[in-house]
Image (cartoon, rainbow, N blue to C red):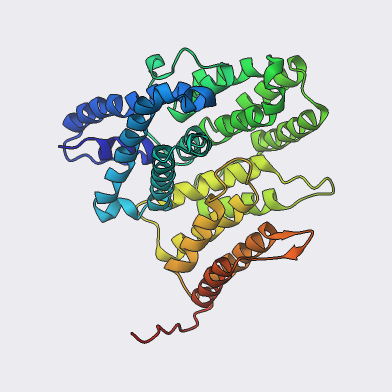
Length: 380
């Protein structure tokens, strides 16, 4: 039995696959070590472009990229029920495409490009692990290469779900001046951990107050951290309503978080909390078609306001999924408008708006789906 698909399913989504839970646990444990091996061995090459590009390491790096490619492509043969998970197929495809592209370019001798692509592996893993509810929490210090510096160690600890150790490394990075220009990444990672994973305003308030008191942050970062503390204070004193509708509650948080005040800062804490609640709705076995439709739109809308926290593709991924699954509905129309505005902004500069032809064609296809217009295939 090939355990790698099961490993990644559990790692990414935390679903129970158990007709034989005890046997499965052993298979997952064994497969997890098999998955971690190529990731661990690739870490120092991802962290150091010179090592990645050194001709003496070509065979080793190429083989490791191939192993990771195999792991992700094996997910494509899973039963269709797993691909119904919102974002699952898309995220697997994104990682598979990344590894396909990096491996191909590396074999062509374009090591610099391949290295640039593989740099996104840790952040992509962390983004998924901070999104889906995962039951497995493990500590495996051997999974982190000892040659990594503080920040790279933190990135791979986050990627492998070792969050307490990652938090320690992130705090250490704030004390090391060489990472000054990465403080925004460090702080955002800490906010995701306390907000999306630990879901603890008390911990977040204490943590960021300590950072303000002990770390020499640039004023812009300090200003943003103070805003996070203020938002978490409101979270701490708010009344929880477990009997309420989590979809409505999540939507309320997202709308409040996306509203920019006079200082033009969105409320990141509310957005992160709101998206966490919406993901829980989508993971529920009892979610209705109408709830799923609105949840997909809300996630696309929210991630369009959180581009610095998650992969750039997450907002369009959920917006497209809403349009494709529920064409002609009010949420699909809303999703198209958000998607169109994102694309227009992306291709607007000093020379005006110049959207490539293939992107315009894709926009038109999405518009027709969103508004329920008929499409006609050409004659063969």
